[in-house]
Length: 529
Image (cartoon, rainbow, N blue to C red; front, side):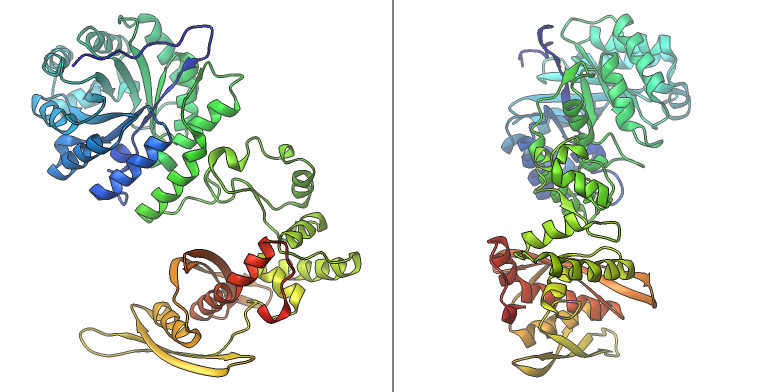
């Protein structure tokens, strides 16, 4: 096939940095992140929405399933170049060619190790034999792909003069992209900069050929190393959503894209990625793999746009630029949140109450603020459910339902079943009890609660934890549910996990309609609380 090669942007403009996403290959092959073909296709569409330049859809020779997933993505996804990894063997190249055949634009990503430890311990090849392998395989691949990328595996531990020789050989034999991976996350930014600057100056290549950085995060330096490579002349960065990948992971796509965007004044290249699609891709990947994003993760962690300290919250209310260098909306996050805790001030409390539909006068605000501080000292973070309870004078969970009794039983036998007998009290409906079974104690209890309340709820997520309080310990449950196509979340505390989880569920059942009114800035009537 013939197609236009990658070409530099005119020098009057910042140069183009190509985003090479490897979520579906390096990310997916990490333990615990394996995806089915339909899941990979769904993720591929999200990456296309994000406008990544190249999407490494998998490793065609790894398994028939991986090859078919790549072919499925190549058939259905348009926009990014679709890429398959291949070892430096004719068989791997043939597998990649078949898988990528339907692609609008295809790329072969061929690699061979070049470092002494890999050559001697893994490949058992001499320098000359490595060069001969590069020549032979690139000639076999010629004309079968729109683009070819060559990677010198473990490049940062390769002798500098041999690395130059290997990359020059690849460029001379048809490689369009020369990838210089820090395969084991061994390097640091100053070293990476020197390596790339030296390669840019010394590797013999046609004008269209660009350098790529693929940095692993074993020392927590993947993003910093990738940015150093960009400063030194790399014009492609290989990265993954949420930084997933082998061992400690890869360079995080969201961090590299936003670093370039926020600090365009210091970096010589810009990406064309649509950053507003980052949040959706991150959240879907997290749910798909069942692996939560760390709260303090840059850009996509739940605390990334959250502010608790009173002085920070006051500044945010006055002008969000005081403590946010990017807006939540710029990465697709619905909005920043002021986390209310013991360090929070009256400004933040008043603003949150206003969002919930409350406009207390100064005297009432002082009373609520005193209650809020006492509760924060005891429990830590205070959420909307706690504030509604304070304003309306209801129980900590904010629900009209009260849990009177929880009994859990497990049947004996080869296939034991879990049963829960739950008794609730309602100010109008009185005491009601019911029994239900489930896969575990919480599932059984939830089934009984739904029978009692007559609701049909899909539980999206439930997180429980134990923490110390002023009198000993308590259990906290955070829940997100879907009711009639609408999502609600809540939190409750209790003496045990099951009671806390039930209270959290009851809160969401009781608050759906009340929060709709609060969003419309209408005061919540007492009977709905």
